Image 1 (cartoon, rainbow, N blue to C red):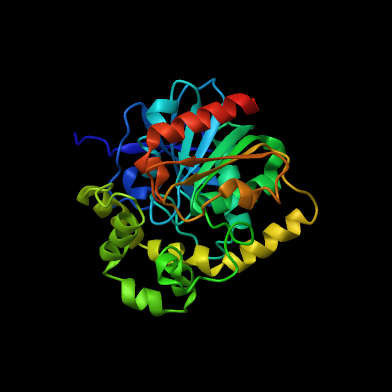
Image 2 (image 1 turned 45 degrees about the vertical axis):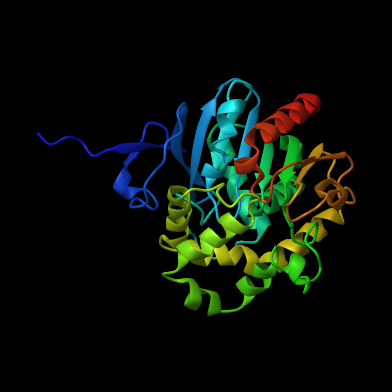
Length: 320
């Protein structure tokens, strides 16, 4: 008798496991982290990939990554936090092993998917730590579901309408940090230039925007590039930028009704994109603190994981 097909747990339909070939991006290799489990969650009609571990009865902490990464961006931080939190690292729609839906990628729409995924995992209240585009989504999620949050940690992110500058700078000394915002908005051209060249593009971001160019090895660049190149990945990556104006508008519509009251920690780095996240966030949140992580570029969780883990744990201990 042939061995049964390998399966993976799918939350939201108790007792059912899907064959791996039925999962989103089944041809994209999965990467395991000791002590953590892969799950696929029915999140309001979109299947999202989550990696879960830590202490099941501890406070829940949801982790979100940005472009051009996946949940794997948190791999160095998660083991350090596993003895204090119930950890859930989620691939956003269009990211990693999550589905790449058609339709809007504005951050309020995506935030609803993320919150539905967390609820499907049986978690009703949680904290959020998020980087880059993950922080875009986390900020919008906090505006909509603030009563469910204990704390919000946002790392080096130009959040549309919030911490993102109104115009892309032209000074070459700083323009390299944000030039891609305008490029990604151009219809069709990025797809024409980048399809089949995803590794070179992803590699540029990972090598240039980290303080040390050897922060990411070839295998990690291959892994992230493969996720962007996988069916619908490039389209979805660009869609977050192309829907950024809608994200900014919805953020300001929500902020016209109320500012954030959940405690917020802004994490910047010595060589990142946003020099002072806390100052940028403080007009929109009543309780904001900030730190600057030394010796790091944009990819702070990869570059200084111990500092990030300590900052997150200390902040959330004070927010409990």
